Image (cartoon, rainbow, N blue to C red; front, side):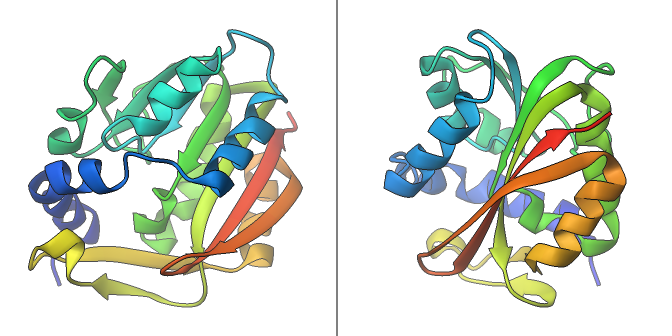
Amino acid sequence: MSDPVARTRETYDVIAPEYAARTNAPGAKLTELMAAFTERLPRAAMVLDAGCGPGRDTRLLRAGGLRAVGVDLALGMLRMAGPAPVAVGDMRRLPIRDLAVDGVWCQAALLHVPRADVPAVLAEFARVTCPGGVLHLGVSEGDGEGWEGDAYGSDRSRWYVHHRSEPLSDHLEAAGWRVCARSRAVTKRRWLYLLATRTS
């Protein structure tokens, strides 16, 4: 089987223009979640948008008064980010120094990380976040992991990992996070949202 992360990155490089066009508007639920995330941070806090894609959320976070920077593995997606400050990077090995940010926003990105690598990603988020900092996670709710095709009208596939609240919360706690809020939504898939604070 091909490397799920590399193949998913290649898919996003191909579908980037269509993806950016179709996901430009955040929707009411995401706007609500971003407000809840932002209100827990001081004004002008430094925030990482992990798995930022074409930079929509990076721009929205900056418009909300935060100093947000985006990191994504797919160069094709980053080319769609316009003026948003973004860089190529892997969530499993972030190109960011220790304790550099006050918060991490990770919406619809952890769901592409193979389950075995999730603890390492959550530990990386903790490494770069100051104590008391905030983490938003938006993941696909469910069981299992595998390829899903028909990515934005292409014949490409993406690797999806589905999560349940309790196992994911346990991983967060082990990495140095405390979950303080949970919510859900249903679109074409079931979404699970967790808000957590850095404990140490």
